[in-house]
Amino acid sequence: MKYIKTYKLTALLALLVTLGSCNDFLEVEDLDEIDISTVYKTEEDLTLALNNLYFTLPILDIEDALFNQDADQAYIVPYFWTDDAIHRNIANSAGTQGSDYNWGEGTRSLRTFYRYQDIADINFFLEALPEASFDTESNRERFAAEARFFRAWIYETMILAYGDVPLVTNTIVPTENPTRTPRLEVFEFIISELDEIDDQLPLSYTGADNGRITKGAVLALKSRAYLNALGWHSNPSALYAGAEAACEEIITSNTYALVDGIDGFKEQFTPASDLVSPETILSTIYVEGLNVSRFALQVSPRDVYKGPEGSGNNQRRPGFTSDFIEEVQTINGLFPIDDPTYDPANPWVNRDPRLEATVRLPLDEYLGTNGVDNDIFLPHPDYGDTRDRVQGSNNNPTGYGFKKYTDYYMVNNIQGDADLKVIRYSEVLLMYAEALAGQGRDAEALPYLDEVRDRVGMPKYADIGLPTVTRGSTGNQMIDAILLERRYEFAGEGPQRWFDIWRYKLGSQVIGTVYGIPDDVNLPGDLVGPKYNSSDLTIYQRVWNEDYYLLPLFTNYLDANENLVQNPGY
Image (cartoon, rainbow, N blue to C red; front, side):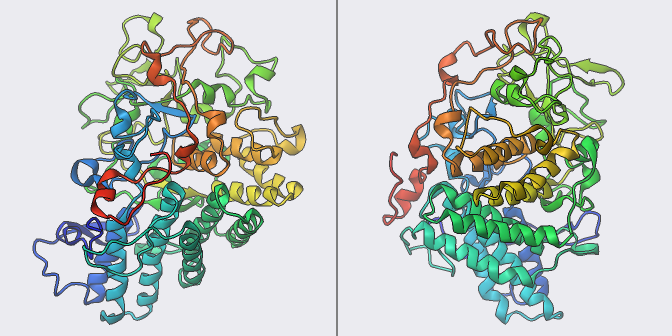
């Protein structure tokens, strides 16, 4: 099993991190020479190694730059494995994003969660920990708990993506070729690990440790694990009950809270919320000079302000689909097509406020390149010679851009400095509602669903009644409403929609041809007329295959380990 290493020496020889101030949590320490026989011996060594494990968390990036260095360990956020978004380079993106659903065992992005180099680092760390000398003995247990969290995190995503995977919990030699462990056994290992470590971590940190793994992060991951197993586990009642218990413990701890209003929502995607927001349960901490984000560069219109030190053209790579845009409710809690007050000539008026906060919409104003005057986003081809129109080969293909994690206060928009909020409190509230609804306790679930809606000024379903979801329905009206809310709340920021489609097997209902803005330039919110599509529509006709609920094992892994067996259909 050649892709499993007993340790990753290069990680120690590179830029490792030490505890810093409470403002930036991690500072960079340059280590020029390390002898492997002398490391992992002291608390300082283990601190360096543990902080390095934080880089196993997802990064704020459309296309992970790590592909250029170590494609096996790149971390792609699957924005485009859903019905809500698409990448502009769909014709050739199977190698880096897989957003055309033309999948096979050679599709590079589909190996993004098969992370045995990270597992090897963690196992090596845990085996070195008992013999290392510690000045603060109480840190030994906490260090182990944090490392075990990262291992559980990686395995949880692996079993969602690949099903059976080798369960490796100790260091092994490169010639070992373990077989795939049954999915259920790996799942039970994940839950048992999280059960054991949740009381070994604090509810919160202060000072230099602010931002480390907390008990809340452990419980939130546990809830995700229970719910993500719904797509394959034989006992959904036990899964819903497990998720309920984990979320209830978070909620009753009174450690977290939503920040009021749509401005509170928007703030979650700016540095203003970093390490201080009561919504943040788990985040990937920005480290100056080390894990800067190219996100704003990747998603923004060409003429947006780039900062006083900005350079180069913005890339406009992703776009939301018309399916997502047209299913975002009006302020009356109705789908636009069902609301008699909806005006297709002014479609962005009186919509869920999260639409404007999430999507770069046609006719949006934004700060222009000079940092003084406003520009207007004009993606329609009939607006004239604009570099943001959908017909341009270097623009997003739908005319609806990504907007979260973009602002006009960065020094350089190729060096974004916001933390990626990996798990927010609103997700816990919605997971709790889902767990209750899955057990038939709709009346108990409703207040938690409505709490998320009420924060941004949307009407409570307790007052207007649940929506009828006809596209992508689970057959349970309450769960449908919760999944719809998850689309609104988390669009363009993480893998939540991917989770939802996979665990409720919605692929055949929601994955299909992608369309963009309406053809009618005078009706930017036209719901019934023709819509823009690529001149090569074939590549936008995404076709769902039931085999896709398991990703293929990358061909290099199969070649390296004769004991691995490919997933069905590949």
